[in-house]
Length: 206
Image (tube, rainbow, N blue to C red; front, side, top):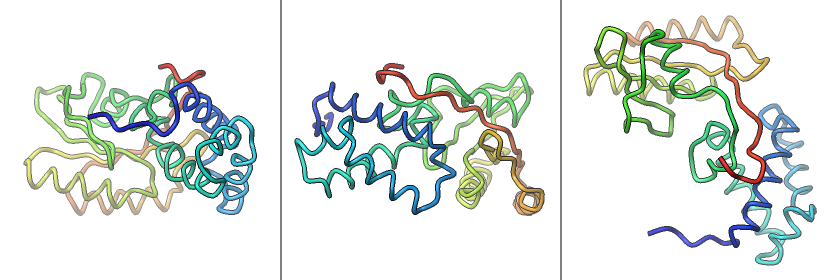
């Protein structure tokens, strides 16, 4: 059963589209905690966001709704997944791109095997076999490594970790070295690729 939506669809679209547009413009991933706090406060005061939300809740609850709702899902939405996927991105690095980077040009994701937390899928390799691929940001490397290790042990398939580097943000060499050593110790492949993330969908339509 579909969960009831707090806001009418049209107002939800207006609010989330405004939030994601602002987050994109401010390079949210690079903001400090203090800057994020200021932005949350600004959204509550913004007629496009708080002006609508406070018709249904207090300003304090509106701030929590923004933080625990759209912004908690922001990273997933930008990659076209999760509850707010339809407000996410117009184009960018896809699961197909990740699989090809890890396994070669002829590899493809196996339909129905994609999942979240972390992003992962099984893929058909160019040799006709099956491999597991988990991908995400460097700060999530521990979870990526664990997911790939579990797949390699429980399913007996070659497993790979793909570290997604944000535009203009290459992984430092010492971090790459550490990732490589840890993955090698676990018998896993590791890859670092530059991610392309598109602009927010205008009007919330994919």
